[in-house]
Image 1 (cartoon, rainbow, N blue to C red):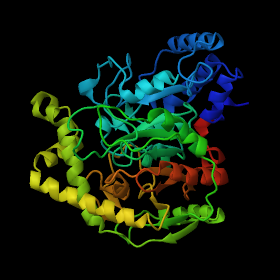
Image 2: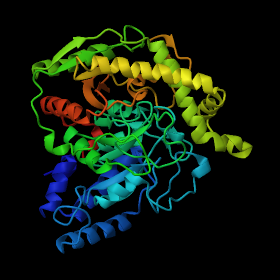
Image 3: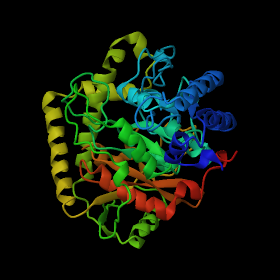
Length: 482
């Protein structure tokens, strides 16, 4: 059995049933990292192999003595699974650079909330995954670790900002990965690496309690995996309220209810939002071909007219995102010595945000509220809506960001990802579904999104789709082979 091709849920069960040792899995994982990571540069700040193996052997001893940490048979649900955490989150004792030279030498003193939950669930930390500087932009490159390359074409981008996580999953260097998503960061790289990524309903996974907990949240943490079952496995660990933070939706375990009939459900296809979103050749036809799978499953898929002007959504998004980033990164900008080390896109975000008046922020918030109400009306008729996960195919890795899409000029560094805004703006749950491959052999994805709080319904649709397609195993990249 090639254990690296097994789902994380299978590996966890094998460890729990003494069919697989933590050290055996760690040894295979480290060997795969050694074979593949030099080409793709997905895993950074890697923990020393001897240290990983020593911890793995300790975990095996504890497991056999019935002293493992967590739940069920003395172990957590992720016991022994090797994980590398996105380099925007803190893991005690590991570097925490955020892709910025300003934090090149920072070592995290403690775990973030989500990381602490992974640790309690029994994961074996093997390093971090690469991200763009401060997570800004959907292309993973930074001055600390360099660029992450797409496993399906090493000359192209792996997407971002969870590009390292997605590439590591595709190459079988990790069985599971975490990510974060403000503007498609769990969706664009998942689509470009032929894996699954899930942006859960906002509030399901608490972030670090900082700043104003009530003002316009846009980002969230979430899981990445090679199957919806594994998404649910990790999301169940990550989820749960934090008493210091508001707005947590009701949390119920997702994994037990994943396999349900989907026949009779309805999906609305938004395509290019009535022509508002420029798309490279081949994106829409591939998406429509992928959606035929749902028809075969008895799910109705039908076109939906744009429910709201795209320009209004973009105005609200650009302003509120800049407002959030100015608050987050403003202290660095205020120090001229540190400002000199910020990339242009970070400075642009901060300056845009600092220039907003309170009245303008309120106006943009009202657009956001209007879109939430209109989306709620759509979900009275549809169980989910669908858009492509990206408007273009993976672009050359040396390119900072695309300046045109299908001949249409892009007026900001991130407008080429405008298609993710309808989901991000109002915190809806969304799963990237691998959609297959284009004429050049490059993968793409679909954003399947639903009403706020209906994470389970989306995962059930994704699970049915996966069982019919299994794209991650149907066409793995060359780096997945030992």
